[in-house]
Amino acid sequence: MTQQASVVTPERFEQGVSYQTYMDQIKVNKARFEEFYNNFSVTAEDAAALKELVGRSNGPAKMLVLGEDWCGDVIRGLPVLARMSEASGLRMVVFPRDENHDIMNEFLKNGQWMSIPTAVFYTKDHEYICHWIERPEIAEQEMEQIEKDIRSENPDITDQEFGRERRARTAARARFWQDMTVTEIKDLLARSIS
Image (cartoon, rainbow, N blue to C red):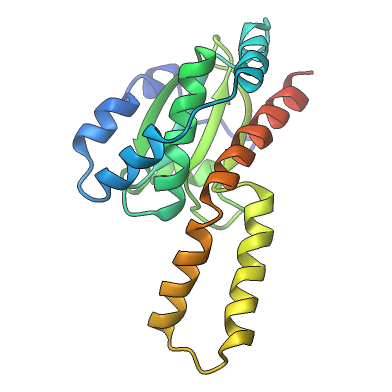
């Protein structure tokens, strides 16, 4: 995050919508969001760890999420963030990224990419704690390997065939990546408030 004052004031945070309100207004992929939400739960151990972090005086109380309903990482990740919010008592609001570039510009991946979902954590007094972007690191590594494998197995693959095969192989890893999202965010929060 830049050193300048954030556009995410407490008042601006309040303009975000709940997960359910966001789901009610999305235009595409609703069934896929619902499937990921219905098939994911935070483990009792992770829920306890998150509740402990939320209960600290300097712990997270609020989570702002930027997303869009057309993005595969958001389709897989936003339901996880919602479940984490429910399991921990952390208040979560959602902002559509494409309507809130001023917020997104504060949390660019590697300082240049508008990657989503982006989850930003604040204390109850709206002090910034940390943020998490897009997908867990293990997913980044595995996606890179998946893409290399597809290209090496079929050097003449068309872009359309490549996309179809990549989606199939990444879908097979979705549940593991969801679990790792919880682990990575839990660890990030613990390091950030210790």
